[in-house]
Image (cartoon, rainbow, N blue to C red; front, side, top):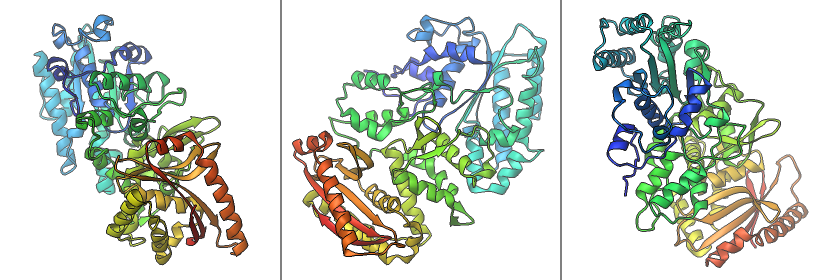
Length: 555
């Protein structure tokens, strides 16, 4: 059985060392046709580096006789351009932010010098790496029969890290007119802007368009293909590919579980299918043993990749309007934009449209549908839990809401094993007693957000909001995750605004309405299936008056 390629981004190693390879090389002819100078943006850990790797090996004249692609689509159906380029490759994830200018220049120097030596080219190596790069371009201008292909992976990786840690330094390095990074792209542009351009092809990957905008006011070298329908699944796995890899490794797992945790990404508004994060799937397969789920469903590396979120929700060390947007998403709301912004500065993230677009590029939200506007939601349980962790951490860090997590975990366990509903009034009392949180509890969805956030911090359940059940939409559907969990729940929350008059009649009316809804929901097939599995259903009504729980009943 082939090795699992988790964390492996070198195509040559995959091909030679008998790793499983999900063949996407049928996309190569499409890439050739769409343009010569391309930029492709996707979230971290979606397979961009492997894409860069197999493009490099496929086009490189150096590997013409290696037969690395003999078992792939493109190996059996090669294009005319196969193994016809000298390939110059950069990976800017190696650039350190500790001494960023030196590190960036060193990365350029290593790669241009290695390129010259690899092909034994008669090109002068200068003390200044940018001059060596210019010498390379001049060589290919003078030698018309030789073609140059440049690949740049993670072009914005170090810039994003720099932005998080030191915004002023980011401005110096990236956006200043004399910035060396800006100068690098100016040199690239000069190598592409004439009929006899020495740089025949260029392919750049990254996460967001921000750095490119700050460097060049947009990708004015060529075409951004990130939203094109034919490249929605250029990286990541579609449904058919997931089934293929599960069948190969003989993994019999509930497909709905994988969809809940790892699926539901859509990057083009013109397609009607979703894709899985490939790193998440490979992590799952790598940690699935003897028919048992991984102890932790979320790859710790993925958590660290999204640490940048903390920067986005703070301004001057205070939670900003972006935090409110995050609250809305976790509570199950859809957020909308008239269009996805493809060119914006990292220095304008206080603008809502830019922030929402950034969340999309980071993979923290995805396209739900596109009718009149683009509608976005959190894609899956993995991202929802990461978002929830940030909400809980931010509220604690700002001393807005600090809850006894040990007590909380004990109450969650009692609900899971005994059906005890004390967790609901306990969390409500903590909200009521914390005066600082009241500014963040101004409507029903913010109440739901608090419950989703803290239910997402324990491993016993997955919690859905606004889930359609028997022609209605349940506020909270709390379903078991681990086999030992005995109880699951449906919760209906009714909300009375603090500006309204509170009365017993109002509470009674809302409770009756909620009980009717719960009885409707419990007839849904999704609910009855869990009961057939031996799980016991708990139905709960909660009535809130602003931030205050005024009634709760186990139905």
